[in-house]
Every structure is written in C-alpha cells, then in structure tokens.
Length: 158
Image 1: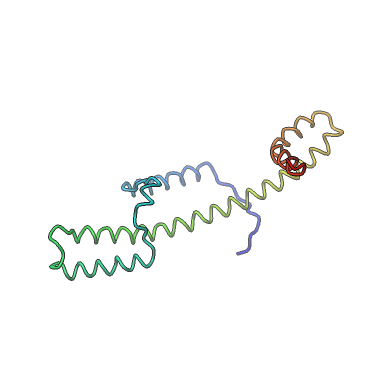
Image 2: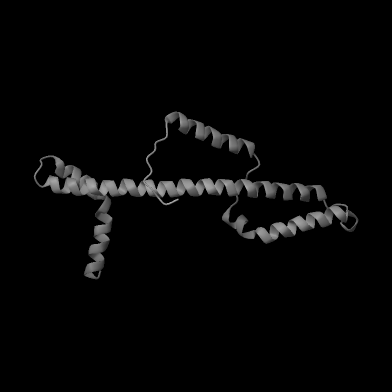
C-alpha cells in the first residue's frame, strides 16, 4: 500500500492496554536475557542454514543416542531447538510490528515537521510586522542554529 497521510490518535486507555500487553509478553518470557557486546561477539550466530543444521542434529541425536556420551543431554538439545524455533517465529512477528511502528513514526514525524516548517515560515514573516512574534520566531529558529553554524563554516572554508 502506498504511503498516505496518517490521521490517527491513540487514546490514553489504549496506550495503557498496549503497555500492559507488552508487559504481559515480557512476563510470559521471564527467561529473556541481555548480552553484552563482548558476549554477543563470542557466541555462534544462528541463521536459516544453522537452524536446518540443528534440526538435523536433533534428529541424529534422538536416533543415535548410543553414539553420544552419557553426559550429553539430548532432551536439553531438543528443548533448546524448540525454544529457538518458537522465539524465531515470535521475533518475526515482533519485527513486522516494529517495522510498521517505525515506518508510521517516520511518516507522521515527517508530516509534523513539514507542517511545523510552514508555521515557522509564517511566524518569521509575520514577526517582521506583528509585535510579540519575534520571540516565538527566535524560539522556533533555535532548531536550525547548529545547521546554520555548520553551513556558514563550510561556506567560508573553516
């Protein structure tokens, strides 16, 4: 579907219900962890090909327990594989939702910024003749001070 202006709002009750639903998701996944950058770097990464490899190794382990050492926990491997499969499915759904929220946020933010720039232009123009608007124009102009400063420096070769 092509982008169209989004015209929506979220009620306070809906916001609370959404937050409660997210908290429910977190409560249903109490085993989730947070890894450091270093921990993430050291771990094996599992993509689609690896998922197939693990699936095949689970089948091999279940069918050939006698070749594995007694200390090898086949059931733990099965549980890990099942959890990986389930979390992969959930993550796909969550990523789709996150992408939609992100795209909507980008579009609505762009709409708000475009409209705000129009307001700023009118305020700047009106401030030249309307008492009291100069302060508002300066306040709105704060957003662009750093940009003007960098542009001026670049133009002067500094």
